[in-house]
Length: 204
Image (tube, rainbow, N blue to C red; front, side, top):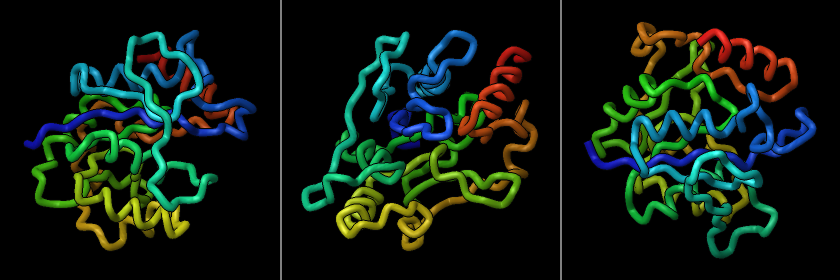
């Protein structure tokens, strides 16, 4: 398996939360720290934060979003965060995990990473509702120019960016035996979501 570097995507604006997602806390801890813990267990010290505007309780490297030359100065969002990870990794493969999915476990991360053999462009899971989850998976270096060109052209929709890429999709049946798999992709977008996730963390 090619070496993979982990990146926590922490730049979400959290409009419905009333504050940036990186500033949200769960049980007194920054929400982004749960994702850092998970990726560090999988990849050791090869973990960085992207786009965070809040300190972490970890001594982890933090980098701002990286924009390709020719992109709008207003460009942002998950597509830019993924591009930033790929650009920073300097030709290595990256595992990205959004900070607002704190219930993703190291078992899922390791399963997805084991599927990565460098022969496809990316490895991404499909959720039980049938949707692809692009913010928890592996992206190879061949994705870099595709994301770059999309961002320069003003296309920030990850589904459209992924269309020409050879993506290995991991189906729900492939991770159905992992503990608490039904909670993996619970996003914290609202105060109600935060209450649900906080309760789940307490019951771990």
